[in-house]
Image (cartoon, rainbow, N blue to C red):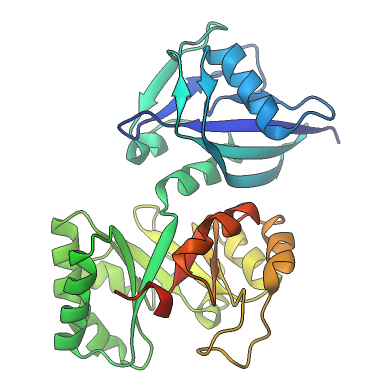
Length: 312
């Protein structure tokens, strides 16, 4: 089967809107929307190809760009590898120089457009954060949880996962219900670590599954109105999360941690080799700090998640 290497640019303007273009009817999957880019020439560096394609297609010169996600996908008639970069600095006015229609779209509205199947994980990667802090408590003490939540909010977090591993489902639900209401009123995305039904009962932006719960499922447990992710510790976990249609995964531990001393660290080489086989966004977790974001991205990660080093 023919394989094509493609450089793709997620181009954002100063207000964070994303540029999309409609494929010409004569093209493969013509009429659908896509993120701009094109084929990489043999021996051509990916970023060189991306800058060339953006200039030829849109008349813009890309500046700062960082790797967002890499996707391997098979269509019935060809195989593609998409090397996707986030472009947040460019010069020139973006126009469809090949006659294609272009639009600037709010990231939250991207799901309303028809994209080729290979592009769908890119939408999740665009909408997901780069840093994912985890508010971890041993028990669902409502007062303590509320105080810590307010501290995180005061420091400007825009997304947060809440986890109380020792609490019963009922106590956890009662403790997080008012926090989810507060978060929603402030535009903060809260993902709850627990069973899928909790977000439908108490609110929240989504649910994060343990690796044990992940393997109890054969299909995605919630609609795409919610985020659904999972904790993974090996390639088999990652492949199952992808197969049942989850939006993202945490892969850990990348480095040694006091919270999981019994687990062998993956180290970056193994992390990167596994992520390269997955086409959903994957976060690096375990022994990392926010300063490791660039290193994580260079190894294929969507970003990094953390508990102790992220605490306010």
